[in-house]
Each structure stands twice: as C-alpha cells, then as structure tokens.
Image 1 (cartoon, one colour):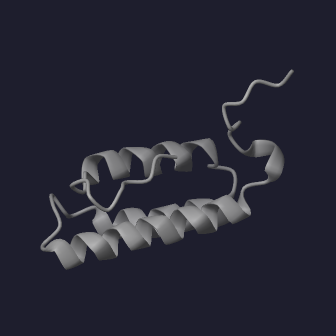
Image 2: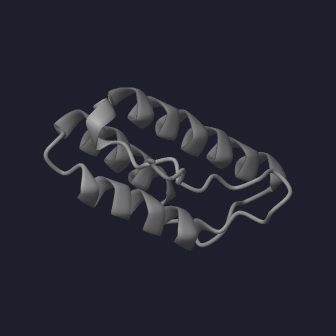
Length: 86
C-alpha cells in the first residue's frame, strides 16, 4: 500500500482507490472492512482538503487506519515484500 509523503499534494481520488482495492481484497474480514469504510466516509464528500492542516489530519487518519489494518491482516494474507523467494 502506497502511503503519501508529507510533501506531495494529497490525492483523495488515489487514496479512495487504494482503500477500495484493499477493502475488496479483505471483504471477508468485517473488522478490516469496517475500518476502511469509516475512513472512506471521512473523505467521500471531499474534492480536496480545506487547508494544509486538514490535509495533514487526513494523511494521519490514512496512516493510522492502514497501520490498524496491517495489524489485523493475517500473516499469510499479506502482500509479498517484493523480494524473490529462492
């Protein structure tokens, strides 16, 4: 999951796309779905952040939710790190 850097402008469309994709991958896990839906509700009506402080709050909410989701994903369901298994 790509996390936006603090220097990039906040792309809410891309954030929603990532959240929706992750929610689809873990649709059988109601706790993960609940967490992702809550975040989607926070950003659903936004076309852009209201201010720099608002953008920071949204980034932090995204990071907190992604960390919470990562804790709840079973180890065997996690995406490979990209290193080749030899």
